[in-house]
Length: 250
Image (cartoon, rainbow, N blue to C red; front, side, top):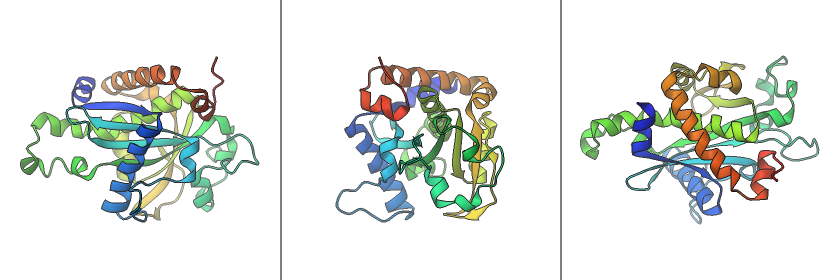
């Protein structure tokens, strides 16, 4: 049922073209800069991006009826070349002191096996759909599918990890989001102390091979749908995108 509801109301896009990625950056600006104030407002271009976007894979969710962009996320793929400025993930550069030595430290893995989930953004009106239902004229079913957006975004992240061959994911997130994802079987383990960073957050880790195996049946069905869509899109993408993802296309 989750797949049917999601597909009816939303369209999922593997953002490959510059036009698609610009829509991602524009949505991030709406959420992170204008609504939440986490990043400076870009008055000239109206987009939010950073140098790591060039070494990342992006996804976008839009409302099927209107085409309005409502959610996005990215996975940053670190380089396996130590001299590269993108050898370290953003989390490693910004919060290196939070990582404890041990099996879940990024240095315990091959660079080509890990990635960072970041810039997860959902349009404010959609996040608040339940509380504004009366004023926005949303149907009860649309309100229910709005609650699938976070799960859908993280399932998209799993799908991006699959096509790029990345098994282990790191993310800075709120404990409430980690709990929400666990209800669907997508489990993250907290590997750092909490800190105040745009709210109470910590660094979390997930083994995505295990995560896929632990998804509840409804979420697994939705994951398979997204993974098939992304795999088809990736098969037709250009060499530059393949190199970012760590593949040699033939």
